[in-house]
Image 1: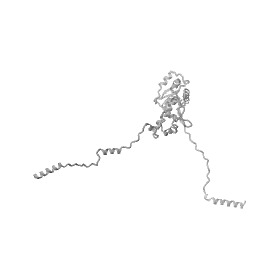
Image 2: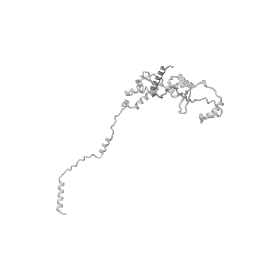
Image 3: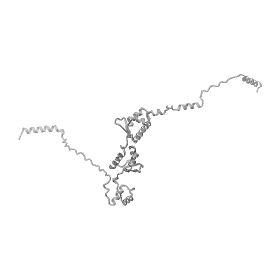
Image 4: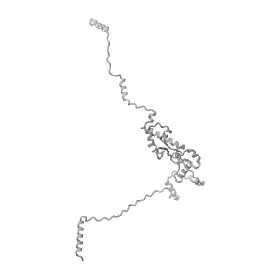
Length: 292
């Protein structure tokens, strides 16, 4: 390479190094890589719902679950009052006071007084509709009324009474049942293991011969239906059971209503009615003119 050109090149480098310069970098308008993702997340987020505290939730009027929760608490309290012997009716404010629910909304309060309590099968309203009390299954208040109920079921063949219904209806039930234990028979129903109460009719007590008891216990009819039992009795010559048991009603035939027969006049020669009348008139005229 030409030595003169090399010298000029070295001199240009020295001048360039001696002259101070400031480099200005252009500002990038594009946002950093993480910014678009953050903006997208912000756009995708739904608007946050207003926060609800305990007082705001209790005053809500649109929550059906909250309404029925209030109603269930009232019914449970009214049943407990009745079982403790306190059965005088209360108005809606007294009920809410005893159940610690005075902070409910006005719409829920109106719903309870006008619709929920009046239509509830466990609540009974006074004739004016302003006071409410618990409505038990049976109207029993003491041991005498309980025995009267059991006697009526026994005489009418209605069977026993559920212990659950008696506990719900009778105030101080456990004490009454303990005092009347000798006059009541308890039987456990095998289907659902619930206890059934029957009246202990002592007049029906009698001693059964042991031989008859053995014969009775030896006869097993668990796997036999009514048809097989009837067939067995018929083979043994026993027909006394035929007249027992429910009889099937025989449908009665309805007699057709007798209608009076109406004799219809013949409709023949209706188009000659005028001609016949003229002919009859002429015949009568001729007979009157020529009497015989």
